[in-house]
Image (cartoon, rainbow, N blue to C red; front, side, top):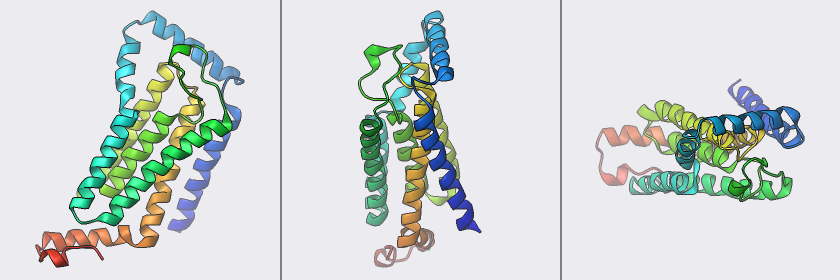
Length: 222
């Protein structure tokens, strides 16, 4: 039953990603009108754009790679190289997929802020990268007692980052939705690989052993 439910979630996310890629962008009147309204709001509230520009950096490469890289290093220090490799691979592969999909789909950015448009639009890299890096870090590297809170915080930060991309006028809403969906799919794939390989199943056992303070040789995951 659990596998069936997870399969439905994965299919739903995939459908959302495809729909956002096919039906969104410059040819969609609703999105065009929305982005025009967002530009009007920025013009009316001159202090908004600088704030959004700061917050959006949470989804940038320095932060996402820094957080996941620090978490991978922490896992290595805890003698969990398998989990460190899983986290690192998840984040890097997802980033490569985003860049490849941008080039393949070729959707232009909104025309409202041409000075900020340095690449193609779909999917939003900030949205996808923040969702993958923060959520994967929370679910793979965070200690179990704090994992749920960390996951909620990770999703929340990614949602805020995505909204800033719309607020700044550098992405269509469908770019952001597609990025979130892709990020969630990437994390789901990582968790599936972790479970099938035994990495994530062995982690609770490792934590129990650690709490009983057995010798270092016995405190290592198999």
